[in-house]
Length: 306
View 1 (cartoon, helix red, strand yellow):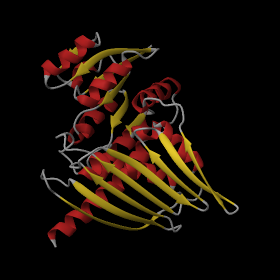
View 2 (view 1 turned 60 degrees about the vertical axis):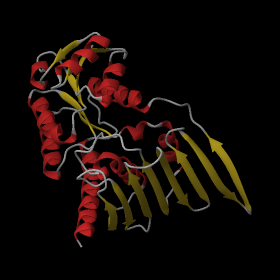
View 3 (view 1 turned 90 degrees about the horizontal axis):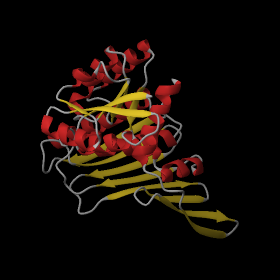
C-alpha cells in the first residue's frame, strides 16, 4: 500500500484527492492547505486527515502530489525530497531553471521519483497522434481559455502554453534553431496572451497560440507531414486524419477509448513509485519545457518594452 498526500486543496488538488482516494493499492492519508478550512472540506469528503502545512505529513506519507501555486513548488518539493518522499509536482516544475536543476539533482541523488504533471501526455488522443506523427514539418497548437483568475501568479506561457511546448518537444526530435514570440499583459500583471514561433534545426516549424482571456475554451493540435495532416481536439480526444494515397485524399475520424488524463497520470505515478521506473515526464522533460516557456516570456516582455 502506498500512502499518499496531496499538497494544495484548490481545484487541481481536489481532483488529485478524488482520484487517489479511489485507486487500488493507494491510501490517501492527508490533504494540506494553508487555508485549513479548505483542507478540512476536501479531507472530510475523501475520508482522510487535514493539515495546514506540508511538513506535518512527512511522517505518514510515501509519496505526495504538489498542486500548490507555482511560486511555492520549489520549496515544497525540496522539503519533500529532503524527507525522502517521491513527488509528482504540477507543471511547471518550478519558476526558474536553477530551481528545476536543483530538484532534479536532489531527486536523482536520493533515487526518488520526480514526475512533472504534464497531464496532456496522458490524453488518449495525444497518445494516438504521437504514434501517427512521422517527421512533422509544421505543427500548430491553440490553447485558449476564458479568464478564471487561476494560475495568474505566473505568465500564461508557464500556466497554459507549457503543455503544448512539452507536446511539441516530444514530437520533434531536433534542437531548436530559432524562437520568436509576441504577446500582451491585459487583465493581470503577467503575460495573458502569447504567440510563439519555434524553428527546429531539422526544418520543422511549430506555432503556438495561448490566451487565458478568450471567449471559449479551445484545445487543438495540428500536425502536418508528408502526405498527411492530423487535427486533434484535446477535449474530445479525437483526431481528424487526412492522408494521401496515390491521387486520392482520405478523410477519417479516429477516436481512441476515452480516458481521464489526470487519472492515467496518477496511476502512472504510483506505478513509478512502486517499481522505481522512469516517469513519462521526468524532471528533465519538465525542465526542458520550462526552459522554452521562460524564453518565450523573456521575448514577449522584451517586445513590450520596445
